[in-house]
Amino acid sequence: MTTSPPILLIACGGNSEHMGTDKSQLNYDGLHQFQYLQQLLKPVFADIYFSIQKKQESFFSSIPNVIIDSEKYSGHGPVSGLLSCKEKFKGRAILYIGCDYPLLLPEDILKLVSDTTSTCAFYIDQYEPILAFYSVESLDLLEKEFESGNDSLRKFLNDIEAVKVKPDSKERIRSIDTPSDYENAIRKIKLSGRLE
Image (cartoon, rainbow, N blue to C red; front, side, top):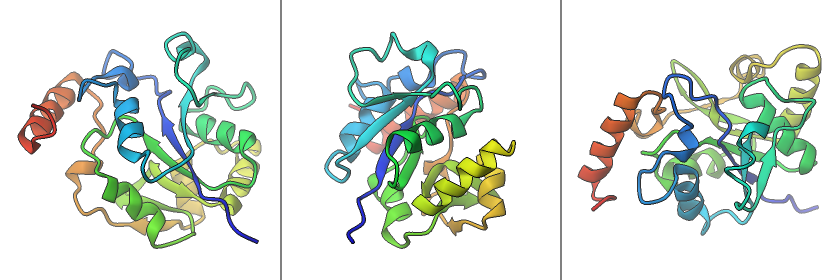
């Protein structure tokens, strides 16, 4: 039996409370960050989807491959998008990447799927649950955990002792959460030559 390649799920549904605006709509390269990630990773992943909350539906109405949080999982943070995708694509592993990591490079993301078929996540002092690969088996277990009241992906990754992936660069896996983070990221992207 051949195993289907993982779904690449880009998390766009965060509340962005510290940023003050929807982080998925931030523009770094003339595109919204979620579109930039899609463009960057399309040569590697055939199945790319965007996880959103119901309240974002109008903004994403013209964007294909959107998965709106299922009502039964909605309101529980990143686990909502992950389990909603699992519900739609039963039997598929999921590579879950947040849209708020603009310094990521393709090789960072590929590091999560190249060495293992086990659930793994980037790890610096703690797991990064939206920079992670979730195996089919772990997704089944996660669903049971959710049903028993555990909605923390980080706790889940700890409990199952997921493989800890050391990043090549701590800076590249740093989430952009505030306006000053955003300005610093823009400067770094310009210095790297990605932005003219």
